[in-house]
Length: 136
Image 1 (cartoon, rainbow, N blue to C red):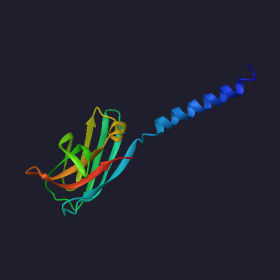
Image 2: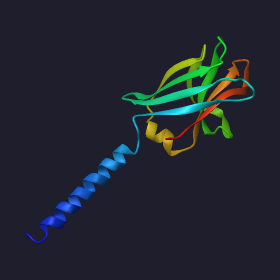
Image 3: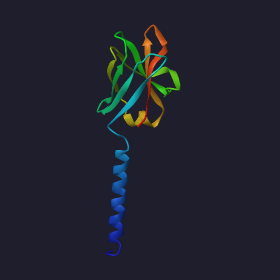
Image 4: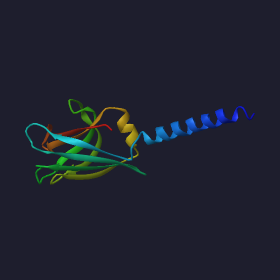
């Protein structure tokens, strides 16, 4: 038994390290760049933070108008986005939006292709003015 003890300790250390690595693989928060589209000049960041009840999404854009702009998480990427929103976010007003998407995990958003998309206005949902791909 004494002969196997060092191997057993080494194996336990490896398992503990792998378990820690899996937990550390999903950060508690990520910042994604939001790029201007269609000549809007609306660019900035979106910070996604895991909370107990879901994912908080905070969008900050420069060059944005004072009026409300619908903002969503869509399946896909900025270059190939599903037009139907997956998760609604609070409208971006004066370049800022703060939302919590309840019941989801940041790790799940990072497993697939999702993008945060800001629309020009409620009357012009077909024109996107800013977009950022959700990825670590």
